[in-house]
Structure formats: structure tokens, C-alpha cells
Length: 264
View 1 (tube, rainbow, N blue to C red):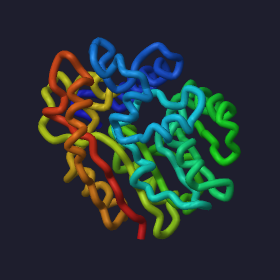
View 2: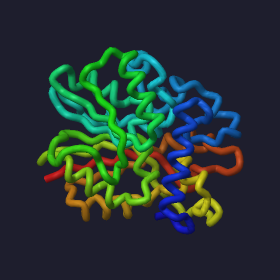
View 3: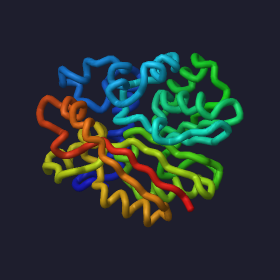
View 4: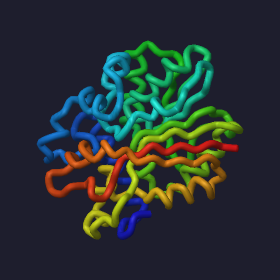
């Protein structure tokens, strides 16, 4: 829980924001009043975050909503035949990229808490003519996924939104097979946030106020039973995070990072 915000209010703020994004009424993590990165197209934003032009062009429809802070498929080392789970799958962009990598013998499950996002992702699945990607409505703290049924978990700028991050990692361990791995892009906290940001629901839903420190995330993952935990900040992320708001330089408080771990 973020200081000063009730968990139910946090979830409501996140659901409201991403429902609006799914129905094209709002932008992504950046402040809509920002004149810089908010004006970028999703493709331009994705290139800045590490996706190649080929990856961007490989996915049809409106799956790429420009909500990312990295490219988890680049660190996941996906292999043909694997089962992949995407936490907070949004419009399905990472799911479709993962589906191409695991091939027809593999499968991808996207889970999102927002009905409008799940509907949008399913529409995008039809546009991408894919048969190995499916989307389910659910919360990442209570995954609608069977025990030990997944090889790889990916996620992109979503876990910071959760009101129960230890619960997210416990669920991740539950659904992963032995030796399964976690490959996540997310934001991490590098300095104490001002009180007005910590208590602002909009700041939480914009991927800022819910961020945890590297040390806290390492402890959560270890406590959940993960091994080989590695969290690596991305120094070049300061440029695009700085453009998330015209009112303050958010890169003074958060940075994008890759988060990796393995289930024994």
C-alpha cells in the first residue's frame, strides 16, 4: 500500500485510468499535459524503450498503446514451445511478440484487471490472426492461472501499480514451473517521493507513486522463494521519464529497470 491511499482507492484509480486508455480517452504513463513524450506515437515511444522497428511492425492493430517502460521480451530469452504469462497485458503488444517467439507449439496468456483492456486485446488478437495467445480478466495478485503451468512470466510497467506486490510475487511463484523465470520491465524508486505525490491517486496510476526501491523488491522476491534475483536500472530511461510530466522532473525519483528472477 502507498502511504495515504486506501488500497481500494488505488485499484479504482488504476482501473479508471486504463479503462479510459483502452477506449482512447487518455494517454499512457505520461501526464496528458506534457507536450513532449505524450505527443509521440506509440511506435516512436516503443523505439525509445528498446523495441526494434521490426518488432513494432510485426504486430497489427492497436495492441501497442505506448504504456511501456522497457522491453521484457528482450530479456526473457523466450524459446519455442514455452508457455508465457504476461501480467497486466493491456492491448496485448508484448503477448503477440511473445507468441511469435514461442511458436505454434507454445502459448501465451495475458491477464489484465480492466475489462475494456481485455476486450481490446481480444480484438487485436483477431487482427493478428493468432491462435496461441489468449487473454483473461483477472488481478495479478489473484491470477486465473493453474499451479505450475507457466515457464516464463513477463510484465511491463505494471507491478508498480499493485497494492500488494509481495502477493504478486507469491502468485508468480505459484504458477511458475520449477526452473521457471521472471523477466520484468518496471520502474523502481531511487529517492523519496514528495508527500503530495505519494498521496495522489493519479500519481499511482501514472506509474510513479507505487514504485518500490530495488532493495524492497529484492526482499519481496527472496521472501516469495525466488533465486538468482537481479535488478538492473536503465540509466538511459531518465530521458523519457523526465518527459512524463511538465510539472516536475520525475527522473529524480524513479528509473526504469529490468527485474529478473528464477523459481528453484
